[in-house]
Length: 233
Image (tube, rainbow, N blue to C red; front, side, top):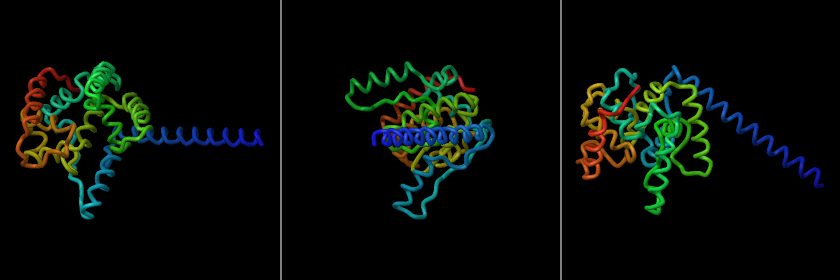
C-alpha cells in the first residue's frame, strides 16, 4: 500500500512538472513569435473586456497598434522616466528599486509601491491578469527572463506602449492620445506625454475630459522634470 502511494505521488509530481514545462514552452513560443509579429490582444485586455461586458454586453476596447517610430519620443521618455529609469541598463529587474519599494511598503504598513520594471509589467500584461494569486509573481519572473533574453529593448518598449491601459478599456498610445487629448500619439507634447505617463499606475481613475487632480498635476510636473535625462532605445 505504501509503495503504491509513493508511485501515485511520484506520478502526480511528474505530471505537474511536465505541465509546468509545457506552459513555459507555450510562453516561450509566443514571445519568440512576437519579436516580429504584433500581439492582437493580451491576457490583460481579455480580462478587462470580460469585466466590462459584465456591465455592458456590447462593450469593446479602444486599441490601435502603432509602430515604434510613429510614437512620440516625448511619450517614450516620459514612460521610461516614470516607470523604469534604468530600463536600458538592467536585464529585467531593478533590484535597487525593488528594495526601495519593499522598504516603503514596510514603513506604510501596506503595499503602496511595486518596483516593477517595464519588462515585468509587459510580462504581466501579455500573459497574466490583474488578479493577485500566489503563483503570479513567480510566473511573472520567469516570463520576464524570457522577454529580456529574446526581445530587444526597443521591441519591449514598442509592445509595452501599445498594450498598457490608459483609461477604462483604452489600450495603447494611439487610443490614449486620442481619448485624452484628441491627438495622435506621434504629436504628443512633452506635457501631454508626461500626463499620460502619470496615469499609468491607476489608468481607470482618469476619464476623457476630467479635470486634473492635484496629485496628477504634481506627478506630471515631476515626470516632466526628469524626461530630458531619460534614455530610450
